[in-house]
Length: 195
Ligand SMILES: [Fe+2]
Ligand SMILES: [Fe+2]
Image (cartoon, rainbow, N blue to C red; front, side, top):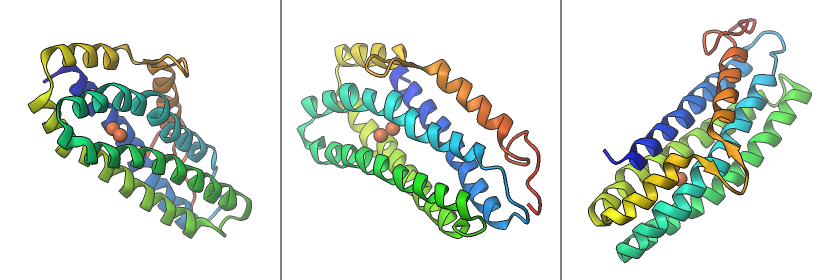
C-alpha cells in the first residue's frame, strides 16, 4: 500500500475511535443518574475539531485532491463534494460545541439534544471518510503517477501543518488524555453514576 494511503487510513481510524467514544459518552451523559464530569467531552470535541482541521484535511485538500483532479478531471465533482463536507464538518462542530455548553449549564436538560447532535455528526463524518476511502482512493490509485505519489507521500509523512505548526505528537498526547479522562467502560476514568 502507498505510504500516504496507509497514513490517511490510520488517521481515519484515530478520528473514528474518538467518534465511537464520543457517541458512547453522549449516551452515557443522557443516562447518568448524577451530574457527569464533562471535561472529557470538551477534549473530545477539541480533538475531532482540530485533528481533521489542522492535520488531516489540509493534506487531503492541498496534495491528494489537487493531484487527483489534475490527472482525472472526472473526479472534480466528487472532490468538490468532499471539500464542501470539510467545511460543513467544521460548522457542525460549532453546533456540537453549543449543544455541549447548553447541556453543561442545564444538565440533565440538553442531554437528549447533545446525544442527537453527536449521533448525527458521527454519522456525517463516517460517511465522509467512507466516501474518501471507497470512491476517491480508487481513483487516485488508478490515475496518479509515481511522481504524484512521491510528493503526496512526502506531504503525508511530514505530518506537520506548516500554518498551524501543530504536530502529530500533540494529538497523540490529547488522545491519551481523552482515554485517561473518559469514564469506564469507554476509558480508564471513574465510572459515571448510573451508567
Ligand atoms: Fe476528508
Ligand atoms: Fe479524510
